[in-house]
Length: 110
Image 1 (cartoon, helix red, strand yellow):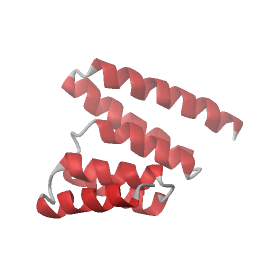
Image 2: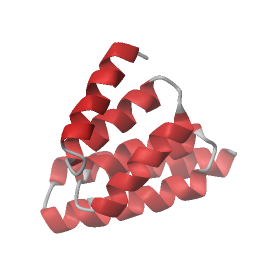
Image 3: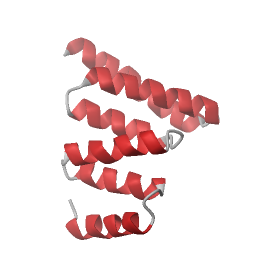
Image 4: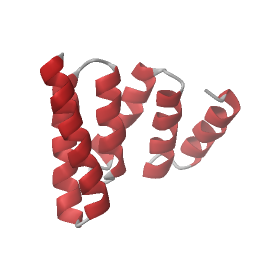
């Protein structure tokens, strides 16, 4: 994890605490750095405060998978699929459906 990048992202978030892109960026940087509890905190905040920010659901689902919580991953993908359908965001919809199917396959083997 690039600590300088994270510090800069946190400063951006301090300047605009309700900006969904800043929340997403901080969450993603924590996720990349393997700091899963911190990433979960920011992704959860993002889904609570900006439930229509569709990109969150793919990354949050992947985070749940990394944390071996496949039920939460599947639930997250399902929520994201619903949001993507409402927004007619077919690209993200396809990504979420593929991720959901892969998680189901993995969960069956778990």
